[in-house]
Image 1 (cartoon, rainbow, N blue to C red):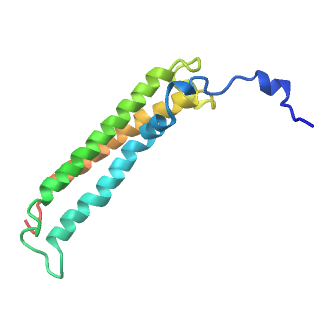
Image 2: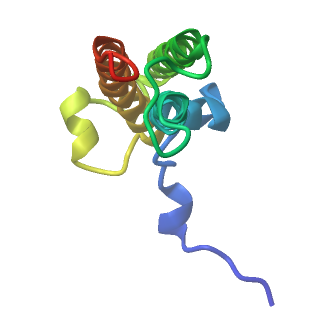
Image 3: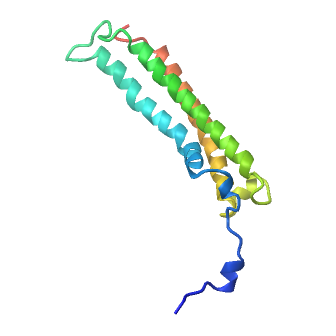
Length: 149
């Protein structure tokens, strides 16, 4: 006994017909790359300064690690570059899949059609927002005086 799909299911078009134009990893990097870069920035940079200025019971006047600012700046720049790269990948994915379904960007919200196009748009939006978050955190980190300063 073999199972067959109903004829209506066989004639229905795939909701993401251009899914082969972009890779799965590219779609997910576009969506998750910038948030992960921001999260890593937030998890790594503040402890570098916190431990450098307050390693024991009493805060220090100078950090114990003289290159803390350079290390934090390097982490910040890498996070910025990751956000830019994720945005670029999402933009490239959007260019490849933008004609996946008829309609403008407003039509992305109405149905589940055009998943690749939708994920590309989400990636562009996430990358832009988290780029602002990383830049703001970078600015705030360098505006604050270090170690009782």
